[in-house]
Image (cartoon, rainbow, N blue to C red; front, top):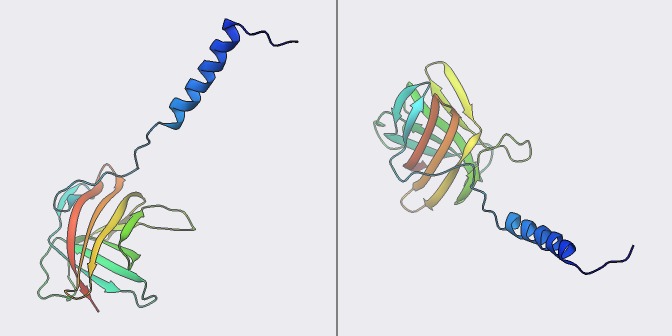
Length: 162
């Protein structure tokens, strides 16, 4: 069969190229969207507002910090809070964006707790915006979702305790 230049073949060729080009330029939104507000949300269907928190270098690795975010004021910087509701998570001790994921290669999650209930968020992201080792402060933000009854979004600032 010989190729005969004609309108039908040119039309199909242009259509295929157009579909290819438009599909490559399609913007895909990330699975998180940070809201510029103080960290707040719901934990087990109860309203929750971030009040205070603390970050500690992991006892397992100096490249990781454990961050606890609470709905109660700490008595003094770097003390442990006794809070009925809160969030805890490990992140690398570096500024950056850490997408929540249950992947075995790079697991990243946020633990929500209220009383004896513990839930794990695998959807969203944590961003460590700055780590000030002189003033011992970590700035960050979170968009984390367990389900419709447990999700948080917003900014936080915590003391870095050594």
